[in-house]
Figure 1 (cartoon, rainbow, N blue to C red):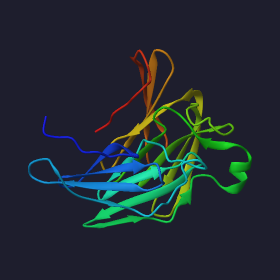
Figure 2: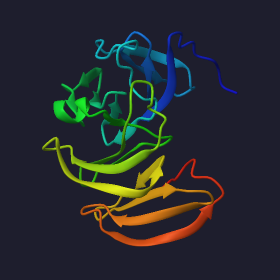
Figure 3: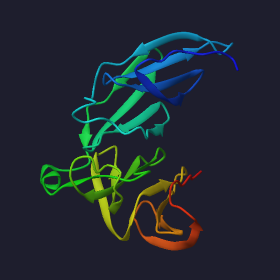
Figure 4: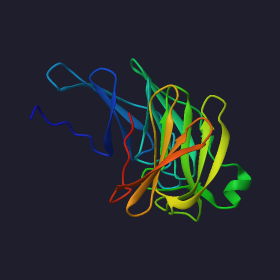
Length: 212
């Protein structure tokens, strides 16, 4: 045990390069705390508010990128948070769903509903049709996006709803889609969505998949 740091109103720990980490705060900001060589707080800073926790909160699942994290809201707004020195930059949001798709009820959902590959800039989301507060409902489709163009590349209809996806971290990534009980894991080529093979009965539950 090294010490204790009060982070009232902020939660979670998202590591950053060096001895620092990011948190999500209830006032719609993110907070970055720096630690010294003894593990004690040396400084902290906040971003400007960029989301409304009552109207459209962000998921606590953040997606790591080389210089920060990607945050996604319940309504599918994507924010890229970059931390450079003392500066916290939050990009203008872009949406996973068009106005027409939102009117049809398409939204993100699942236990592990996103995946991001920093090498290619590909972002994946489990999507379903539902109303507000269905952000934990499993996805019936996988949507793939290019974060550079902020456009969807493809969408895949799933034979069985899935609550968990993950993607490998290499330059030619594989996409993993877990569903069922016992869980089976689909292995797909991330760039195209093509199904390569299925790992049957990969575990008793589909609660989490980790790829390297």
